Length: 376
Image (cartoon, rainbow, N blue to C red; front, side, top):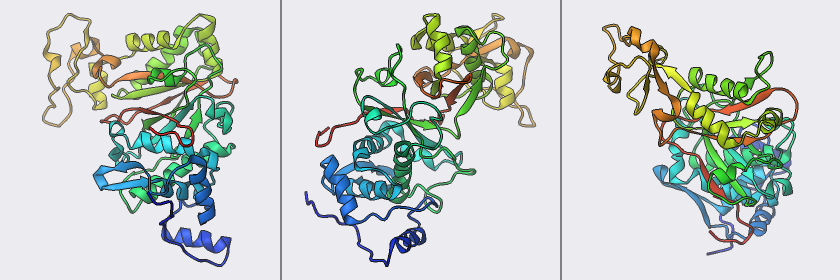
């Protein structure tokens, strides 16, 4: 494989002319970019010990590929450092894995992947896992997420004018954070099949912005059951959909769980046993369909195993027994609906976060972050 860069070279007068040229070509996200000069791009490839033409990920639906050179070009433009390159490679590998079903990002609902990093590399590159974790302020968090956004936009046409069809857009586009692993709970990467201490990135097919959960003013907020009920009630009433739901627990919430000896598995079990919605509620929301398993509190017949039929006005018929017949979230599509838990954020305030999944097809995918020169 050749070590020569193959990207077209454009000559401009100065830095500002380079940025204007990038804007004119539609290569940016609307913000200024760092000019991807040959020496800057080569420094990224040299750090990761990658040949320019090495394919990092492919998008078979559009018959396109991301090479190491193109990833480096977009990473330079985003403001990354060369030492971020191993994380960037793993991010691209995750979203181009067939299990992630990348084509869903063209949806009108504006989904976009969010990334979580585990392992020593998070500290090495100064990824934020604490105060203001989903906000601005850390170069690694801001530029890695932006680099993936630019790469998918410029290489796979994931932008307006290309395949992007989002009605409202996604202000969380480009989100990447590290998990706080300085706790007794096992890290997210372990739940994804890796060993503790491994460097791993997990890509989640998120839907819109993450949702804020608050425990202020709730009498039972200082119990694990109380906090877990807040999560379960949101899942039941706010977003009762299939997919992998990521719950980002703040240190202040986690402390309540730890004081009572709760593990991530205990929280998961609580959600599986307590997150439910009545058939009536699901019909009113227009989301009722044939589920694989349900609890029938009134000992009714099995007619609910069939799709609800609408009346002549197109509105689902709601019968009295619908109020006491419940669908359990985790059992609705058991092969696809489950909960993953991570810990991050500032140790102040009674807040946690839920990342809503894109409900049709995509799965969370985790990839090892390889050391420079290390092969798959």
